[in-house]
Image 1 (cartoon, protein in one colour):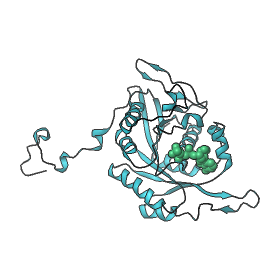
Image 2 (cartoon, helix red, strand yellow):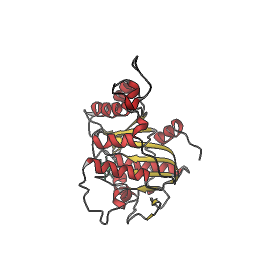
Image 3 (cartoon, helix red, strand yellow):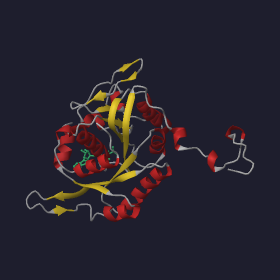
Image 4 (spheres, helix red, strand yellow):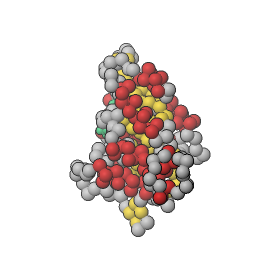
Length: 281
Ligand SMILES: Nc1ncnc2c1ncn2[C@@H]1O[C@H](COP(=O)(O)OP(=O)(O)OP(=O)(O)O)[C@@H](O)[C@H]1O
């Protein structure tokens, strides 16, 4: 604040800290028919690391524990959430808003694939239109009572994920990575983006960490030795899980049946998220 501050920001041109935009300035109001207790973003530095699988399975595991769960599929150009749950067809709407679709076990979801006449239509929209769509998923979808909402974020740390970070009141983010040399840089970008918006990083989940030999049980690091522990230490965040590359997972997703999986891969991550972001059921 300058010495000559009158307290009236509207008529002032100085760029003092009290004048800087705050996170709340960008947040989009939720739909009146939404009561969402916790919002967890699932982010990745690049595509194809299993972010959508982790999002779907986290929601499934929380649902199994008796929570009301939902997924906002913000990965508008690569939407894969409804298919993982075998959910197809157009979402319904009333004059008051859009009704989220629901999986067979009750996880609510909204995705661009539920609004297009054909799931094979490519989304070739530009950044601001994509970001606008995600904001509408928040403000125009009548989510009802949700304990945990997971947001499958657009991959990377560019313009669109940034807008999503700014528009939706995320309580925390989970970073999904794969084992490779670039992991430290990728995690650094995601951590710094979250930090710049005061969003806590809950932890890192490493996918494709190893393949387990079906005969002797040996764990083979197909993508090289993991550096996730030292990266996590560098940023003072926990490693929530290290998942194997397992055909059971890809088969379940191909069969559109993530809810039929029974692996314990993310049990520790679920318990941790439950403890740091507790909600009453
Ligand atoms: N641990 C795993 N073992 C076997 N297959 C996996 C595993 N994790 C993900 N997959 C498969 O890999 C493919 C890519 O995963 P997914 O769509 O979750 O990645 P993504 O990071 O969300 O990609 P994008 O950014 O392109 O949306 C999917 O077919 C999924 O079923």
